[in-house]
Length: 209
View 1: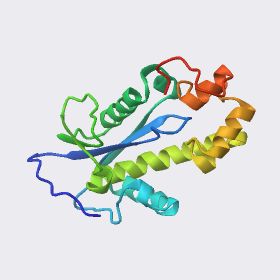
View 2: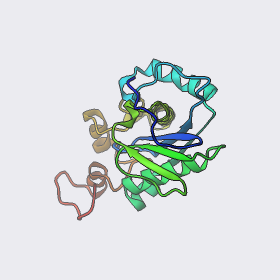
View 3: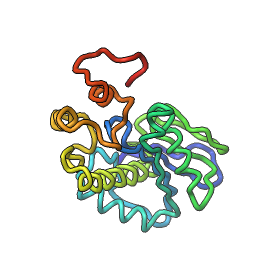
View 4: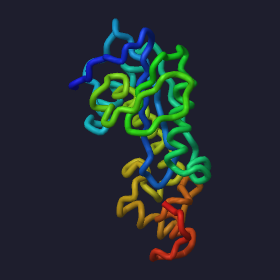
């Protein structure tokens, strides 16, 4: 991974933060915060989306074993529907940082929006491909959410959560039309709202995702 040079002028710990699950139609949005140990590096870090599932699982264990500290948090489906997905994502990120055993001096967040935190924060577009700590956070968040999907696939097998991870694939949309929505579907997301309203077209109230 081509890392950016650490030139933030910080005398203290730096945490990387990323999320998984903004786009799916079901399940929580998951965020992770990681402070890596420079003396015990994790090799092979990259944007979680560029790694195979097997490689993510192996790095998931290695990151948890080698990091100085890490925390994983989420915002629930109810919080997503109440707050909207952006605010719920920022809430999950804030919870992850607050869950760290060691307080960082600087928090580097993937993307262009920042959660409200008491310490200095910086947003980095495509940070999961540029900063090792953010890459580590992206892997923890992704694998944690994938595990959620596997668990809920057992509880709601008709939807295929283990395969599509909650995204709006043709299979998932067909299951939604046939089965209706389950309690873990995001009611404010348009395809789910259409099913709940018994609609096949666009006749939805304004403001739905």
